[in-house]
Image (cartoon, rainbow, N blue to C red):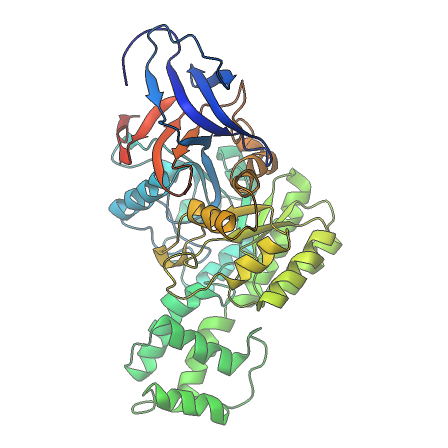
Length: 460
């Protein structure tokens, strides 16, 4: 990159996907000044460089920086809907860097019981990625956190209302419910193994915990019998859990961990839907087989609420159930989100069949990562999958994480498109595989160059 005068930065020799879901320019140039896109030229037309700093894309593709509207672990406050203890600061920085290096310029942290002031790094340096936060500070959501954990909540988190947190800077509502409080994946990898170990002395893995949970309670977590059945007892025996505990003890531990927070978590969904109707802010609600009918009922009862059904590809659904649920929600005006989880390349607990089914049916409005125990795959990995499988064109797939998101969240409508006047948030990636990120520009500053962070420690 050559130093000079003129534009603050010019991207040359690049294909451009604008983020509107349809437009792609095979060749163009992007002029940036004062943090905004101020000039575009297409085809053989050249921008007047006048010695401006230049990023030569070398034929790679430029598109709007990814907007991830459902992530966890990227603030320094309480984590998850369970209000658990904050992650170590070095873990938060690592999570932020992973998102940045995978092309994300704007991120919404939906650990809804943290506060906006907990976005700032206590070390006093500012990460180049824009990080925003949500609020789920409703009475029942707080109660649900304490039903399962709440160890990260302090007086400052408990004293404030959701309206108060909005005044402090929260830009959306949620996450309403979660795997911790509605019996989802976080129960499988975080809480259930610990609860089972407490009574048996045996630490099971996430897959075994899920099997035990679903055999005991059913896939919708509503089928518990008065005593464990033969299938549950046989599974406990297979997992070597009955040497120091009875099947009843194991069943009671699982039921307590899963079911105890669910009533308050469901009430919390309603509180956030009502708040959405009052404030106009979108409310992100945990959508899985156990909570799907509650979200549908809220959408019908509170039509003014702006509801986003999170991770509609949740593994508790079968592909057919995921599609049917999304269609019903869409009929009620609910926005359909899918998450990469760990289903694209990691395959820790989840597969991509539900994601594929929803994308193939054209039922998706946004794509996010969620958390998946910290093992999430990148959004652009999923975009590449959609393109290679022929499900969506590159512009269509990218819009799910750029222009679509910007149109849903008021806080992000300054970005999400490559057009004059928008924020200069631009990701540049390999044209044949958009998940191979080379450069990232945020607010007109080159913050990732050739795959390495070059602007990660700007003093606040």
